[in-house]
Image (tube, rainbow, N blue to C red; front, side):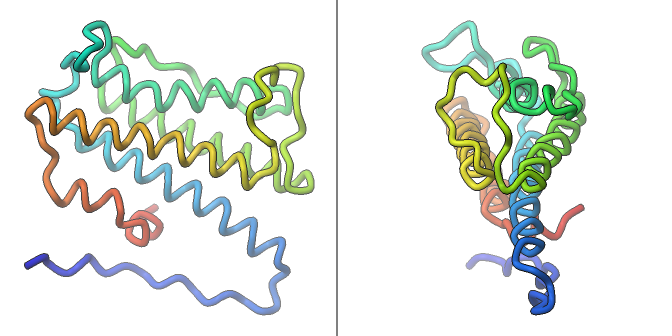
Length: 190
């Protein structure tokens, strides 16, 4: 029998006097922050023994490198879409040497910067204005698509990390794998 899920704060009911644009702003930024906390939750709980294990079929890549990609990918998007608009871009991490603690600190910085990028888009009619650096053009720049793209990317790699841990003999405890789906809990964390 499963233990009961941890209790979390219930979200406050929407204020009917609050304009819809403010409500949407809060929900979009909170959704990003919850995703960010979920990524950090997983990285903090990866076994240290797993960190330098080579990926099956890719002997030059390690679990550390895959985890570091999460931050460095955020940084790449921030350089492309945010930096030209004055949003601070955090430093990259060395994907071959970054410690778990360093990566968590970097993810917190890039998570905050990503929230700033989304807020910037919300302040500009719900769209991030395109920049000269944005040449790939695979992503519509309305904030909803940007949020969905970033959350999907991170969810994909979180799934890879969980699967790799299992395949490499370091299966994550159930409270970790279940915790990845406890978005109410992650949402209530600060």
